[in-house]
Image 1 (cartoon, rainbow, N blue to C red):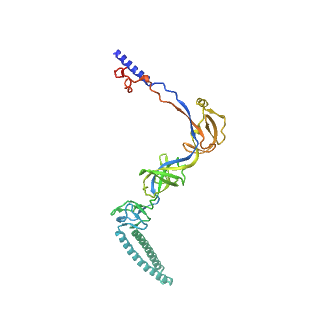
Image 2 (spheres, rainbow, N blue to C red):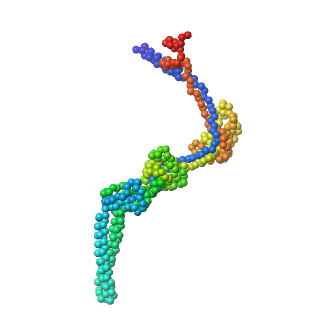
Image 3 (cartoon, helix red, strand yellow):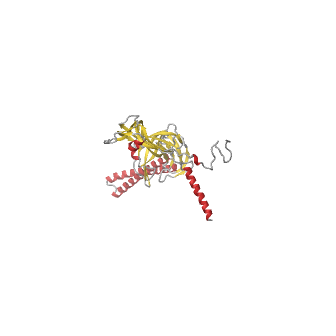
Length: 411
């Protein structure tokens, strides 16, 4: 048993040693190179990304202030309507009955008012001549005032009933297109505590807006008038243009109000206007928004890494580069870069402007085409497979002698 373990252990050691010998060939030394970049003209942009919802600029919900049954509908989805156009009618039987009742009450109260008015006028004359008692005059005055109040009340009721009857005829308040219909003919609507919505009409779908939720960390750089691009999933290959029209302030709990608060994340609504001549943008589409908070076109730029580069004298000596004037101090308000001219590095003090995550604007000190040091790069070749350590289980290359099996070319 012990002998068997010794044999197995020996085989394992041999396999490990063979693998180490096979794959541990000596690699060539890596070479050190100086990475440089040319001062070039370009653009620097800073952006803020957000998501939002496409909505019409003007959108009106049309409802009814009276309860009842929807008798007729004259508009449907995508119908173009004009202001004042009839789009629905409520059942008017009960409202017309209320109108007749109100008319009867008004007529009755008018008759009573006119009678009491005449009676009061007679009583007033008799009271001035002291032909009736004070009590009779007061009674006539009371009946007159009471009849007058009842008559005025019935006049107000008549106005309300007539208005309710007018509400049963529903017309479009604006020129636009129907983007939502919430009821069907025969459906009962109840206008108890709030006005039920029957239709949603958008004024002009060639002018749309995106309500984007911008994170609180980015909202400080967003301003009105900034350029915006956005895409929607419906047209992934199309990019739409827009402009920031409004940055809504204030914190709210609901996402449908000015800003949203969820746990520790606060977002603010940014309103972006966009033209929609082809009507590709449809209400409620989700938009992936990019807001350009800073744009500087056609300026001299250098990589940000160049401002952080400090040459190592020993390393530069190894690759044959000489450093000149390395003891210069940087003046206030200036930055230091290293200008390469042949095999020489010279410090150069420059003035910088705006910057992005990768580029910095150069306002003074460099010209287009100057070569500056950026970083040190180390390159290493892949280790070569030693020819003498061929894996015995892998087939040899074509044409190679295989004397063991007698298949090689004859000598």
